[in-house]
Image (cartoon, rainbow, N blue to C red; front, side):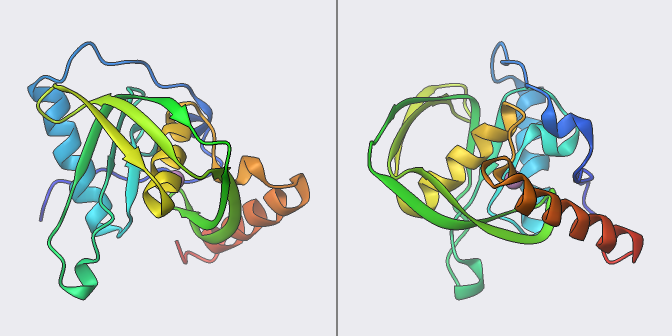
Amino acid sequence: MSDLYEIINVPDPVLKETAQAVNKVDADIQKQMDKMLATMYEAPGIGLAANQVNLLNRVLVMDLSRQDEGEDRSPICMANPEIIRESEELSVMEEGCLSIPRQYADVERPANVRVKYLDYDGKEAELEASGLLSHCVQHEIDHLNGVLFIDYLSSLKRNMILRKVDKLKKQNLI
Ligand code: NI
């Protein structure tokens, strides 16, 4: 048995909190990144932010590799990620979230972004993202600001999704 975090689901208020910057990427933060990755792979998902495991520091992990198609893992770990450039061009993609199980909706975001962050070794790094990676990194940074993909939907759609998750919980399906 590996040591995993529990993933927090809506409507837990921790998902609405703003996470705080880390001072540096030390051994504790690296341990957190490792454990978040293990939790994400187990789920399975392509991204996970600290709020989703009940931690309120600005840490996220992602891996968009297709392991089901034989690709090697390709983890990306970020501390203090910050969008430093975003395109005017927009992109619509269907998004889901490990904290909103089994629910999906189209979300519109800037098509391309450039993100500055501290990597697993604590070094300053930048990522140029487009397509799925762009949606994913923006979605995860949103989590650190207490924003969920359903916040971009009409209140009608959002409430429908929240009711569906509530129903799944009551049926012990999640
Ligand atoms: Ni999410």
